[in-house]
Each structure stands twice: as C-alpha cells, then as structure tokens.
Image 1: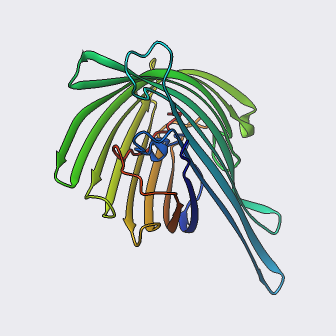
Image 2: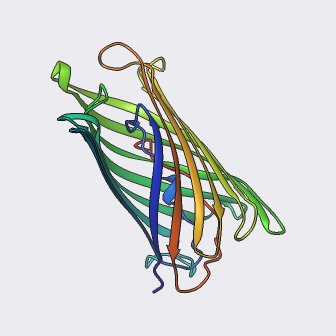
Image 3: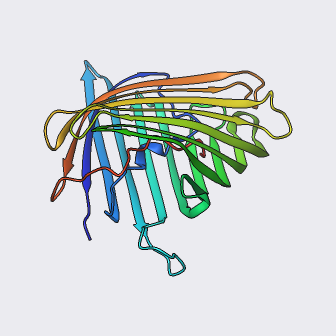
Length: 289
C-alpha cells in the first residue's frame, strides 16, 4: 500500500481569524489514482514577547483519505472513500483569546457505477461533524447529514483539465450559544458548487468552492461560504500555496449577522515514494458540509 505524507507550514494573515461554521473538506479530496491512503498534517507554534506583553499561537491539523473496494462492487475500482479531518488553533495574549477553535469531521463517500449512465458520475455521502469556536455567536455545533455529489463537467485537454461538481445534502444540526445559554435544533440544506482548474503536472492548480446553507423552514436564514485556493509547484516536492476563505451567517441566535474571512500564505512539502499522477484534483467540502 502506498501512503503519502504532506507537511504544511503556513504563514497566515488573518482578519477576524475565526473558523466559519461551514467546514470545507473539498481540499482533502485529493485525486490519488489507485493510491489507497493519503495523509496530510501540519503543526504551527509561535511566541512573541515585547517588554512583557506576550502572544503565542498554537495550531495543528491532520487529514486522511482512505479508498477501498467493497465486496458488492462489480468492478475493480476503489469506489468507497473515508475522509477524516481534525483541526485545532489557539491565539492567546495576556489571558485573552483572539482565536480558540477546533473541529472534527468524518465522511463516507460511495460512487454509484453507471447510474443513471456511464457519462454521469453520482456519489452518495454521509457525514458527522462536531466543532467549537469560543469567538463566534454559535460556540458549539454538531452535525449529522447525508446527500449526493454529481460531476457536471470533466474537460481534459492535453495536460490541462477542468472539473465542475455540484452537491446537496440534508443536515440535522445542534448548536449552542454560551451568551444566551441556548441550544437550537435545526433542519438545514447544504448545497455547494466547486470548480477545479489543473494546468498540468507540476503546474498551477486553482480550486474554488461556494456553499449555501438555508434552513428548510426559513430560507431567509442562511449561511454562505467561499473558499479559493491556488497552489504552484516549485519543485517535485515543494509547492507554494495561498488560500482565501469568507463566511457569512446572516442570522445568528443573537439576531444579528456576522462574517469571518481568512487569507493564508505558505509552503507545502510532499514526501512521496514516487510521482503521483492525480486522477483529478478536488476542492473543499466542509460546510458541515
């Protein structure tokens, strides 16, 4: 079994550096061909002290993708995928937190072969997610959901490729707001559109995903998320990566709206035994999805 390890060091410029209530997992959907296991991890720590005024940052993440074939599959393709993603970040100064968040996400994904036809690829998905963020109006959130994912476009021209996906899911969510000591229970839709541009092996890769999550009983109560990433290989193993994320919750339990945004710049170092030819590069998926 081949395995792949990616070590990521990020230098971040953050505006309202709080994680959105929508978690994007698309970035973990690496196209690894017949590679069964993909692992990615990152660790960050920094400490500054200016004449007694200090601030320290701690962060870490781990992601895993495992592909396998079930007994009932009629072909040799690895039609089943398990995703796991975990993240923790803390920025603290003088006993005050400027960032304190974590989340866990588990997802199962299965392709339905030749349904409704060979040209249209549909996947069924089920997921669990839990997260906490002390700086948002909704401090704790747990999600259970299931839905479908459809490949709309697959355009391969020479070394260039373009893929377009759409997905929609039902979510049951439980949320807690500390300031009101309030628990809410909601039925929500989660829909997303994701585009992937790949300009060839060892060339620029662009991924963009948009999420929309309205309540079923009130479509005026919704959440929006946008994530864009660009990754440029500098060598066989080293890449430069930049990301931009934006999240809007138009109706919090406090009755107002809130947003968060984040810009990240960094380098990715990829330890691999041999070159991996991407089967397709995938974007983000988290919105609880």
